[in-house]
Image 1 (tube, rainbow, N blue to C red):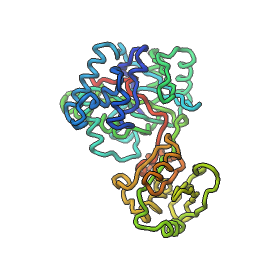
Image 2: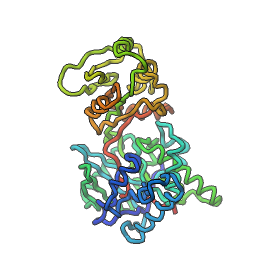
Image 3: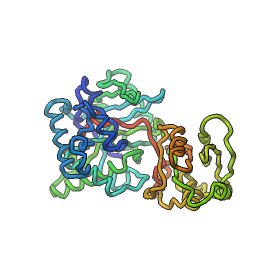
Image 4: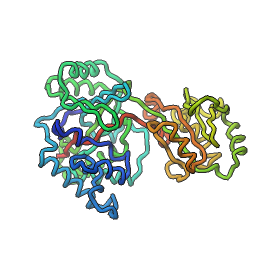
Length: 415
């Protein structure tokens, strides 16, 4: 069963929501965050990237940065830029991008279920990135950014959400600067709130789609609170973290492409010869870039030309949930043995480009100093769930979800 419960959301006033809502903290660097928040004192980046309000010489991980985040959040509440609901509620969060719609339930989920794997994972986390959000959540005494979860669709839950949308007005409806429409509703009917909890009782697992570091950090902050309060009952807010939970059929995963700085000492001729040992290679002679059309097919951009390369039969285990993934096939048969990218998490000779930036970005990067680029076929949500169900992890940078969840629309206080 999946434990899901409502919470007293802290939310922007309707007339300020467009100023408050920000992109997630982890899709930009410090300089970009500062530029995005320039001239906007209400931007939630002042909470999730509070280093933008500090001197540039100060480390973004300095304790004072997290103290500033708490100060900024408290001021936004004191000044009634953000206002807390009086009773626990669920919220519906809908996003529209390029004609696609995804609709999720904003709720609190259990740190115990994160730890016992009822909330399933598919990625490793890095301690430094975990610690950053631990510090932010701990100092703010709040979940300042939601976890992006998914579940195998439930028809009754879909009906409840769609009916609520049909018969109730949204509290927010705006288009962000990246042309994404964001709409939110408040579910405040006690009978429906209770029924939603009962439905999730019958859902076996939730899956982290995006936000492994945030979920790990949320759980560790909750465990820290338990140590500080040995008489905790389990019902306190710190035992739960804020999530947006989408049915699997709504989610859209984009390609996550690779670029490598050099050919690891190989000439282009030597490199192509070795590639052909594991892949069928065909020069792409049509206009534009080559975008793979199916699994186990890749595009390769080298020396101003695009190639279509297909993994040969027998070069991967088609029945293995991880090794059958395209990211693993490329890593195991080309990036590691030919280009010496032994660990894509740490090797500085490889970079990754999310599909939202387009394939022209790969050409641009190669023409500006990189050597070879690979376009990927998107991982599917079924692949993600299969890996998580097997208790395994996906290769780094396997999934790029769009659209991104906005921060600042909902805050969950831990007390």
